[in-house]
Image 1 (tube, rainbow, N blue to C red):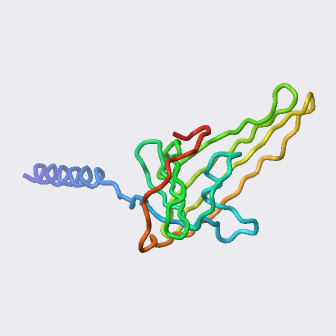
Image 2 (cartoon, helix red, strand yellow):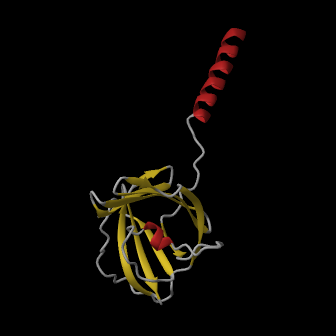
Length: 184
């Protein structure tokens, strides 16, 4: 009888350990449907969320707020608002990794073979409780005839504060005009 009692106790302990081991702590998932200031805070040189993610080399409209929304696997939609009215919208193609969105783009300009240049930008966007964090890596390379050159790579991190949605905002946006690598 003492052996059966010990075997039952060991079996119960193993069963309890197995049951506890099967449950993992679940961390809250960041919400990818939010409103953020377009201007990074604090920063010495003004940096704008919309412009940092928009196609390199294209003129961009002005706005105060950016609405971000996840569109499924590999896409993030950005809408730019000025005075509670949507003035532009674009959809970025990228990659989702551990609740962060990664987006890469490059821009080619010039007249080969005389002069040409390439600018590249890699952005990582991560939602936090009260802000959006963006890390940027920028590089450029150019050539004029046979002289090659480029600027040093630039790495920076920016914070865009979360804001409440405008009380009466217009969701009607003009069609996306983004045309560069990583856009649809």
